[in-house]
Length: 203
Image (cartoon, rainbow, N blue to C red):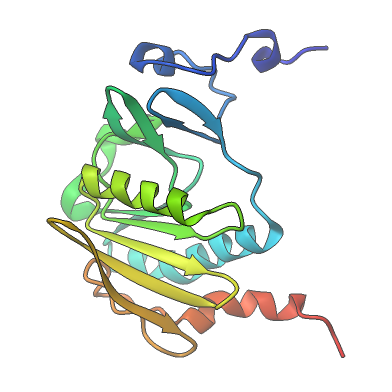
């Protein structure tokens, strides 16, 4: 028996009106200049790291009422024409900019830049694809981007400047991540990547 999504033909190219009418069951995709691009299924490691970020960072944000940490799938609209959307693995939305979130509580997307976009790098992320993401985040005005490298167990911080993103540091182990956006939290890469230790082959 066909699902509602299967029964309704999904277009490969959409404009803004077409995007607003996409079936709600369709979640894991990005739109690049109108072209609907399904996102690859994340690995088990990837999902563990995303979950661990939430476990480590969200309690600190909540304790200080700084804002919310949102996980994918959730659309960030880069521009309406030609239509481009992104789905960061995680993003931080500050109370200072978004208030009490009442205006977006029921929204399936935002058109404002998140304060921080976090991308967990995957094998499918080529250098060109990564640059395209950075260009989009810069065009929207995202102040800071983190690149999380599972293989190196590191977190790279990129800070927005007028001409592009400036490399602000790469952090690993017990080093405290130095963020211009999340100055009031403490984050050590070791606290995020320790979830991978149990996946290491036992001798």
